Length: 223
Image (tube, rainbow, N blue to C red):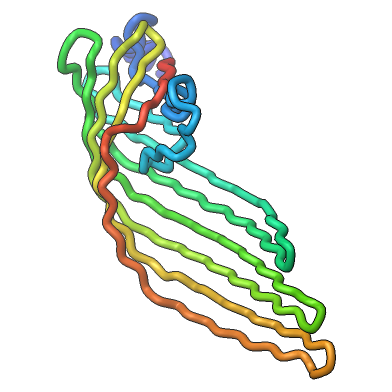
């Protein structure tokens, strides 16, 4: 029985050639801000609208069909002191996407692709303002949490600088929906009167459509 089975065993398929892999893998990172800094000292004020700092995609070498992922993280923490106030900010924003795409060669060294993404966004912002004088102190704490889901279509184009190095850009049209939880606590401490405390909470629904122009620049490694 084992001898008969050996007639149908193949070590590799016909596509498993060294110079023609079954899948192409692409790992990209945004370099637009870095390029802008070389020509503009105020590049921090220039935004791309695309929050996905790192991307990865895997495409079938023959058909061009594949899957892709993207992620972005923005975390800031700072404090500002004034003559009679102290402001502290701690913000964390996270974005993630996963989708399918179709990539085709449109010209020598040029490829283009389109597809559909599912996305999830998470935002957690904390802001504290402490106003004080010789008579009283007011502490205002604002906590905002946003969670949204959605999806949309995208298009991209890449130029092959070499066999393994590409540079590309993409544009997208996304729609998201979710909730925004915000809590505002105000505590006032008086020098002669008892302290007071008030709290307000809101939870509005959010709906947003985003059209990201193809101005983001990705440096991509193919392997």
